[in-house]
Image 1 (tube, helix red, strand yellow):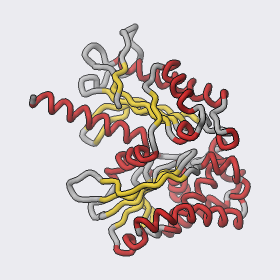
Image 2: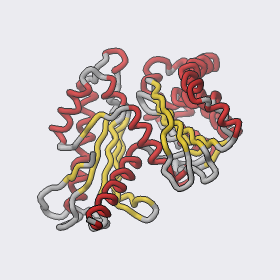
Image 3: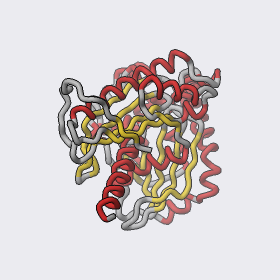
Length: 355
């Protein structure tokens, strides 16, 4: 699980020495489209962020056609992982003697699960970077998303429906909520579609109203078996079901709804949007067109191809499960990994103390 990352001290890097005695923790998430890292130390509110990193690497580029990760995509991913490893090592050094290094976990998700050469790539990346990179399954991906969003689930909820629209897959988690207990995963489904896979195959379709509607209907049909098993619609009608979305798609829609002149995480993370606000944001985003999306301060040219495919996935979820309110979460697998690592370390410390 967590690996202790240490290095022989050199000249101290210009990194803050905060949190060394409280422990340093890191999570690295290598997805289909992005490589992300988060380093933090425990705090009363959960954790204090020390360093973060995010870069578009397009690891899953062309995967659907070839079944393999391309050499160029693998090089981009390894280059970003090297940056993550170096920054983590500098924090381990800056913690000083007795800091204990960084307890760090690095995961790869759908692109590496699907690719014929996914395991070979992970072995190569581990050797090139020294990071303990591992491929996780879809269930653990859903569990980490739930862990990261647990603090956003309200006290009055009986159930939570959480979705994470990724680059190569979309995870849906159906969660039991009980007072005084951690949210428990009842069921999950992983759809083999994400913003990258849809963008590669039907991006232009999304720009026509008829094409967008057909795509939404097709995705809703993929979700229907999960609805049949768990009867989520009935639970929603009974009340006490909270919907949470964690992905670039929903944070973008939140930015559009708030009419932000630039993206502000503090205004978006934890934001509650009612159905009318969600539908207005969807309509406004879809009406922007490619040039309007590229100019929007919460989107930009680098993400323009992925916005409407993400909106189609979200629209299918939104229409199938008509929860009155959406909670927007600007958090994900990195945060979930940090919370797990910190909890494990705390439990181990208590057991050792009481031994």
